[in-house]
Amino acid sequence: MNSLLTITWDMPYGLELGSFTLRYYSLLFAGGFFAGYFIIKRIFTAENIPDKWLDSLVTYMVLGTVLGARLGHVFFYEWDYYKDHPGKILAVWEGGLASHGAAVAIIVALVLFSKKVTKKSPLWILDRIVIVVALAAVFIRVGNFMNSEIYGRAANSSIETVFLNPVRQSIINAYGDRILAVDFNQKSDKLITDSLDYPQYTMTLDFINEHEPLIAKSFVERYVASRLNNLAMDEQNVFIAEGTTAEIIDANNDLKIKIDVLGVPRYPTQWIEASAYFIIFLLLFFLYWKTNKAHQRGFLFGTFLVTLFGFRFFVEYLKANQVAFEQNMDLNMGQMLSIPLVLVGLYFMFTAHKKQNEVETK
Image 1 (cartoon, one colour):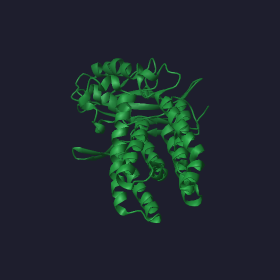
Image 2 (cartoon, one colour):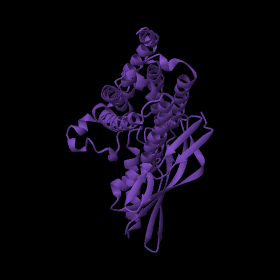
Image 3 (cartoon, helix red, strand yellow):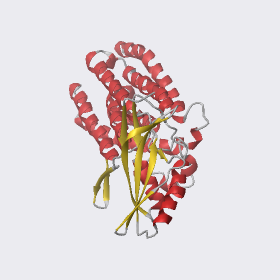
Image 4 (cartoon, one colour):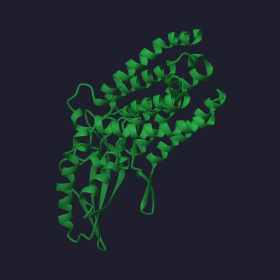
């Protein structure tokens, strides 16, 4: 299927501030908490809830979200690595967060919050906090797009995305002693095949102190091409077609090697998820303010679990596998973790009316 729009995503991961990089993902992650704070504050004000409860809630939510998301990634996705590198478990800045771990940890944190602070049923705060959690999920998925991560499988869709920055980082990480910079320029045409329409780019490698152009050219055609082409399809964002030759540009001891590459078009699953989560946020917001569902204890919480993780189950079919062990699984880890959360959500949705009656007769 020919795409209507091919997006080439080649943005840096953040703003370079001297020796420090302010990552867009971090800004969006914080932005989700910031936006959620004002929404939950409005809810607390409407219900005459003490301000000190809100201050405590922020602490419980931040700790629950960050620790849960990190430990979820460690134990669900990469335990084989972290069991041998325990000192890396809390290295959140190196990447690796799992929404299912965050979901479980947030529930635990809010149970503790209810016991220590509100003395109310945990479902009271869960019914309210899921509104802002759904909005925070929107920010996080946009952050994943900025980070060029958690993208879709290779496929032509109506709107497709080619992620180039991971390619640049991979080459520099592997050959940084020889290659200073990697740049891409998109060509106007595509290579049409029976399965995919591959956007074409010219990849320019800027070599460091390289005085032997033919050796550099051979290095690109053999070693760099091998590195790009031998990745699993889920990891491959560009590849060099067989028979493609590199071009040497040698001027004033500034050696560059150019070679044509084909970009792998992918489903923009980060934006698909972000759009769905925003709709879920609007649904929960409407149910809270415009209906009596907030009085049916557990209904909004259950609706959140069913809609968000139900959608997550199906969108996983479009996403590239996150870790190697998922390759031969009928259901990936994200799908298997979503099923129990959906079932829990259904339980609370169908028992919410009964819980409301219990409260009214006490």
